[in-house]
Amino acid sequence: MRIALPTVLLCGLLTSGCFERSTVTDSLIVNPDTQGSPQTPSPTSPPVPAHGFATVKWTATPGEQTGFYVEGSTDNVSFKTMATVPDGTTTATITGLVDGTTYYFRIRGYNATGTSQPTAVLTANVP
View 1 (cartoon, rainbow, N blue to C red):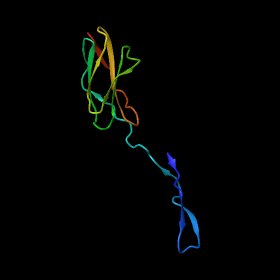
View 2 (view 1 turned 60 degrees about the vertical axis):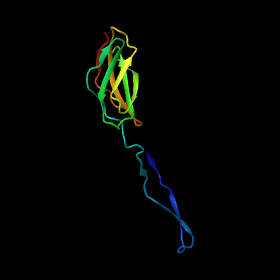
View 3 (view 1 turned 90 degrees about the vertical axis):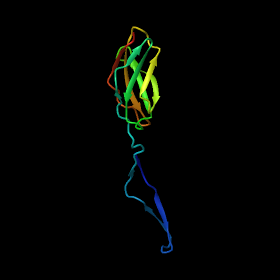
View 4 (view 1 turned 180 degrees about the horizontal axis):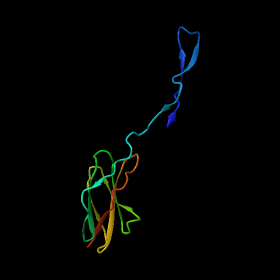
């Protein structure tokens, strides 16, 4: 974003009045957020399914994100957020899953700047 700095009104004892002087001759470039979107988390193992739920695990750089979205799908195309957990959390148990169904999971980190790319898709066959 570009912002123009204001001019300064200079008045002094050595001048017979006041005059305006620009503080800069160009505009200043301001970067409001230098953090950037977080890096993509890394899954540590395949999801662990059981009757009606699956546990997903990952690693990520602490402090780079505000938290994580665990997204799930039954068709490996349309993903929706199934859990949102804070930074420092590296495991999520997704409940309410239908037995006998294959689920696909991926994880994204997020912060005020944006959301990371998703992890590779993880598959869980709920028994």
